[in-house]
Image 1 (cartoon, rainbow, N blue to C red):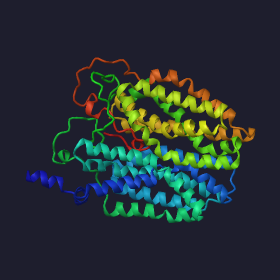
Image 2: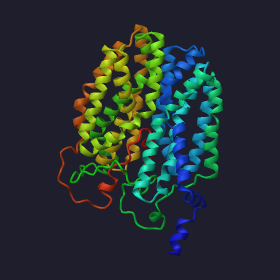
Image 3: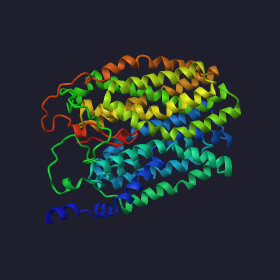
Image 4: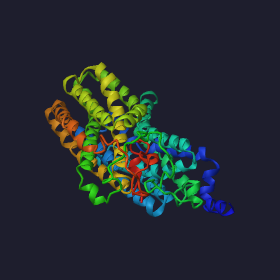
Length: 473
């Protein structure tokens, strides 16, 4: 028992964290809220920049958002490697410095290159601030506490879009300018830097049992979330993933059509969602009068942070049938895409169908892909597969700028929306290749370290949080 205590308390920073778990967990969630996903609130920031006289073309503004979104996706692997090699403290220090530099550059938004690079850095460094806080789930040894923390991280990432929505309100009511905001907001990466230097450890927290030297027989647990049990894991009895793919060599997974079908499915959905976020201001300007457009933008910006409300439904559908959630996402994408093509000026359809659909779809899509990668392919290559998936997402996102250029040349977004709507239709068929475990109801004997156990078959479904993981082994 004495040895166990000594081992557990060998790192003084771990001791500090364990003394006040609720405090430091709250700090972790708050840092995620204020940094990790704020670039996806672009629709609220863009009208402010235009009202301030920032005279960039729609194509240039679209490039700015694309830089932030693609940076957000591509940072997964790099910050994962930093976490693996140097630990939470160094990763948080690096990310906070990059985030601060991004804010400083964005404060000179009248210069296109400054806004482009700055916003790209905000997107790139946000997940790097979130990642060093994920292992704090291990402050709570019981599955319920750790699961609640991970779910809060998921909500915080999506809720980050509220930052620019609040800036828009401050701009309208007290005249806060964007340069002033970006410079004042430097206090956020400054606080992250101080927390990293003074509190975050050089090694991730582990569960108390792990620190005491007890054997963890599961090779599928992420080192960043230790024994955290997910409230969204599938309880389906008797459904066992394909033994030929779970924890299979990376080369085997990359040769299997299921992985590429799943990655293509999420890439097309994210392309569509990002296109809406990047261009909704211009689409509304073309479809309705100026006052109504501004009102609708406020509604859209207010809805975006609350995409996490779909999590209970997503969890239930994942527990019931993965095919259902995949096809539901396709139906939702088809519906909001059709409205943008044929009824772009309908205030009611935009408010009650398109905006809620866009707000919740990202959560729905990423929750599904996080679940499926773990459930079908295991966790031995989980971080790498997520990284490859996000690289494909980024590649598809590059199509956004040509679509914007095309629409601006035509002075109409109907053609671009029609192309994206058409891309949704094949996804109903792609779904059948993305879920090879469908219909398997007979359990097979599980060997230690070879198959995914029921307790770790699903990490919490969280939008850009799982993107922060690197290779689990």
